[in-house]
Amino acid sequence: MIIKPNFATLSTGDLVLASASATRAKLLTDSGLVFCQYPVNIDEDAVRMAGMAEMIPPSDIAIALAEMKASAAAQLLSIEGQKPSGYILGCDQILAYENQIYNKPLNAVAAKSQLMALSGKTHQLYTAVVLLQHGNRIWHHLSVADITMRKLDSDFIDAYIKHIGDEALISPASYQIEGPGAHLLSKISGCHYGILGIPLLELLEILRKHGLTFHEKE
Image (tube, rainbow, N blue to C red):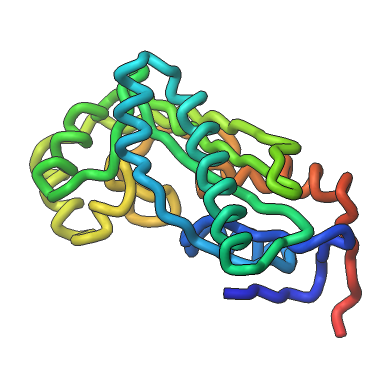
């Protein structure tokens, strides 16, 4: 899918977002960036499990996954005969508490178990982005947010999970800060854009150094 706002373009090549995330696409679109969205599939759970088994810090796993996604997009585009002359952006997020990674829950029972485990505690959300140019990593950034959950009781968790339905299964710990999940939280310390999926200010800064051009509205 090609997204074409009319405010900011890269004069040195195209920008490709290697993610299916509607939230990430909206962040780029709302900033006025011209980009192509090119989702890729990798076995993220396997990479995370292997990383935990080797006691690799969650932050490093997030960066590795972001680079794997960007590299996979570059390879697939090349196979399809498209050789992007510009930039590919890979992204990943990992939610962890005391270095224990929480994946997306498989069902409502697992969602409740995660919320009970994190109740009253401060966990970390690691958001990694990697930028490739001509298949080579030229930049990466890690945004870390400390997120504190309220002390939650069982009845509230049941009501919350029932209210959001299948949305409980699309994010680790079953929340998005821009939705009803805000009721779970008491404090957030970190970049708002990063929590949503892309540390946008840092990304725009590096893109400026690579020929970001601005246009008046037609």
